[in-house]
Amino acid sequence: MLKLSAKAIEMPASPIRKLVPYSEKAKKEGKIVYHLNIGQPDIATPEKALDAIHNFDQQVIEYSHSAGFESYRTKLAASYQKSGINVNKEDILITTGGSEALIFGFMATCDPGDEVIIPEPFYANYNGFAVMAGVNVVPVTANIENGFALPPVQEIEQKITAKTRGIVICNPGNPTGYLYSKSELEQLAEIVKKHNLFLFADEVYRQFCYDGAIPFSVMNLESIAQNVIMIDSVSKRYSMCGARIGALITKNTELMAAVLKFGQARLSPPTIDQIAAEAALETPESYFTDVVSEYVARRNIMVEGLNSIPGVYCPNPSGAFYCVAKFPVDDAEKFCQWLLESFEYKNQTVMMAPANGFYATPGAGKQEARIAYVLNQDSLRNAVECLREALKVYPGRTM
Image (cartoon, rainbow, N blue to C red; front, top):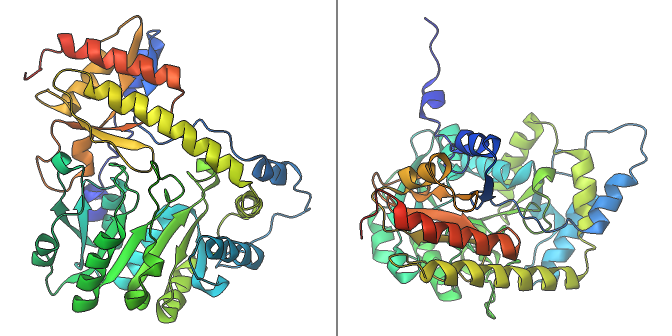
């Protein structure tokens, strides 16, 4: 009998997509399904990016440089500089999505069996990236009761072993929407410096911060400039999820040279998508002002609506477009499946992502679900009403 690899067996299914067969069945039965499970914005992609695709007139779709087009890296560096992040084009390697950037970062810094510490809940695919790179994830748990703030640094430091190679954060966070403060990041910098670790920071949602909150980039932690690896992407910033263009940014020249070898092995990032991403850098600031305003309105509808349901608790996120809510149910995964299989309200139901898949600690997040408030405001109101009615009749309700 043919045998699959250990990595194939260990590779986790996505908690974001694992309930798709149930949603497809519900739709075939004629139900309206409100997709709160996946961070696919319905915001229009900037016209500059779409025009670049429509006006593509080259006769051959060629490879780019393995690090990405120089013109794009130059303009991207200038864009970072405008937002107070002092990098140049040599500090940037363009990747096939932010996912590839983090995978390259893991592979260039970690040997099989090495460890990375990640505050949980975290973006579920980090587990998959770690499996690909042969890295072990060591979680340190953040709590919903304090809005998923950075766990005490003492708890993080207790997780450090001889095999620890780095700490991974997402800021603002997916799935929680929590925005780490400058003070919290400086605390992490002290640990990183003390133990000679890498700090991986996924900053793909940096453009989406609310209520006057201002993001502080890890690239501005000057005391650990050589230890920092920033991950970025056009997917959410420009509502270009299908473009698959990301970036790895670091001041560490030795690390960048190593990462480039991985980039050479996959030849180059997508050509047309890079052209669109480069054009997107010309998007006027008014686009982001409007988008942020819309997300604040959506967040308020969702979070206030959830907290108005008896027994439900949801912290108010400061960034991204996700929140994690705790439900008065026996098992959130069973509840999410039941919503699709057995429930409807006015021929409508809701799809959420069970939060247990965003934790590495067994049993954690059992009553929680991640919600992406990426739908229009009316759909979000309808989704909240569905959840309110569902919890009145769910057989596994606990209170």
